Image (cartoon, rainbow over all chains, first blue to last red; front, side):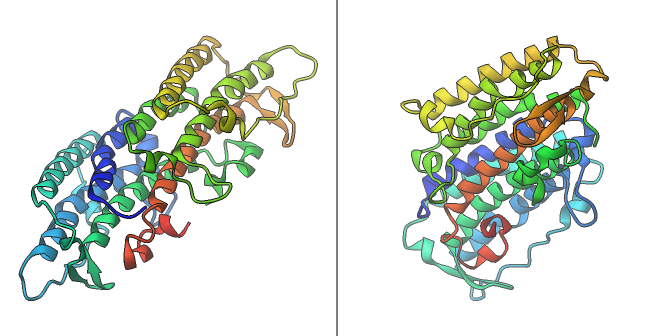
Length: 174
Length: 174
């Protein structure tokens, strides 16, 4: 598939409901379970998605489209959620994510990005030159990647419970 | 986590809504895209989940709990969906899955399985002796594995669109 805004929006606008359907009301053992040191729980991942809405996708989109002389993105903080989500419930995070996403997609549509603007460039602090189209396509794959990651970390909690079926459930060997 | 029926039900009863939230109304390119020969699209995966509801989980649960002399499961047909989903829309499949799952969870609860019954055994045609607990835990991980697989196959459609971000979106390298 080649990137197009309408099809990208189909995914981006579904993610809040997908996460709520998957996670809302689950018992704490599912929500806070990770796979050991330096791995993320469902709770951590939703917090990470919130930080993306606040500091990454739309902020960077505006930088690319701006007339600024230096269009260098700030480094994204991959660990901000550990501080920012403190004291919040998963339900609060799901609602916060949902509101931020709605607002950001509204902004994205209002920008009315043209075909030629999709090729505008900015500088990523580690990756170097990137285009707006690449940024916006990454937003989509980032959502889908983290949905998969949440399903993965939850599945792993039963890795010893499935007995010899472990051989058939490929997600348990990943 | 050790298997327990209530926590398992939390996942099993959420899967239909999770799939509908993720997939309902998506354009065909997302729904029918796979990753090439012998890989499955979102459409194929929902069909596969339907076949599980019809021929696997509850059927096998009843075999384990039965007083039959030979408690050997029939081989599960991993490719049945290619025939069975023909002519159906994704929306029809999502609704069919949702109805079957609701019915099967009703049956599961009505069976009022006791702790000692969870250890009852049957014979899997390839894996040999398995317990009811292992079967029911596999049902949960099977759901989560296929949710991850759907997110994965859709993310992959943009693997060339994200440019150098490919290095950061780990799902694209899997």
